[in-house]
Image (cartoon, rainbow, N blue to C red; front, side, top):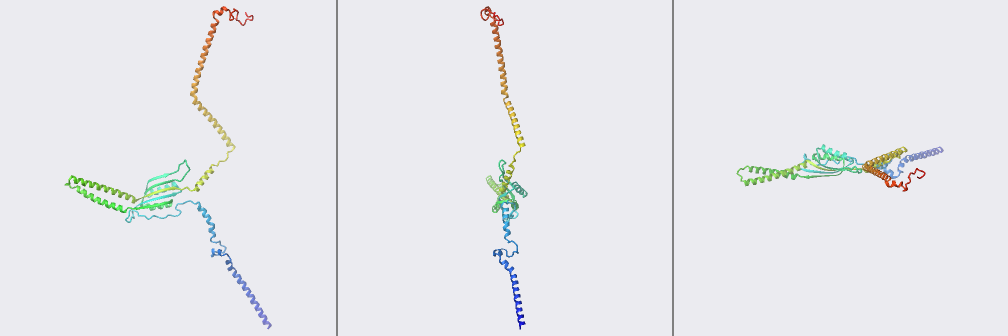
Length: 376
């Protein structure tokens, strides 16, 4: 009995031990499943299928968006960046469907390469067998800083090539505005054709009537007047038909081409100019050479100025020299004349009889010899 009780107790203990181990294993297995659920609900919903350790999908755009905006903020326009809008469905002379249309195309275009844009436009017109009716180009004046230029052209192009021309424009320019107008001239054209046929028949009848030799002069004159009026009407409608044909086969294109200079480019050019203006301080040798050069240039300029002044006053100086020489000669002649006159007067005075009787200049007959010590 005791042995049976001991076996039951041992069996119960083993069962309790096995149950405790099983509960611990179940808790360990449930721990990874409860781990993701413990994360914030917002994070779990943002990336439900993301692998463990991977960054959320919204994190990558949050870092790349500012850089893309920074790159696009200063981006310039590039031709054909967005693609073309395709060809414009129009009725051409080869596919008129019984209609006759006269097309006019007005374009306002922009380009960053003005002269290259003009070359592309004109070469395209020439390649498509078109021609330029008028041209007006306004460029830069070299006396002023560069500014945006523009040009206007009136072009005639074969209507069959109009769609191809629009595609070239889309690929090379920025289209500011495009206006295409088509005028249906079918009714006027057909009326002109029928009118010409009617006038031709009337002309033939009048010419046949003039061949009648039995007509009076008055009847013949009336028929000739009618014939002249009908022929004038025929020429009028033929000229109108010719104008319709010219407009139908050759479309008119009015192009305004504008140059675009982005502010960034202007700022860069100004910065480059400012950098070029910066000049380092000169050294002692450079300042000495500059001072010596200035001194020598000043002396040379003074000598040149003095020489120019002498050349300018040379005629006046020459006249003054001649006048001075003449005055000197006259003065010397006068002095010589006076000297001779004074000498002659002295000789005359010393040799007069009155003075000889008086015996001397003192009137007493004494000698006037100052060398005699006695005074006699």
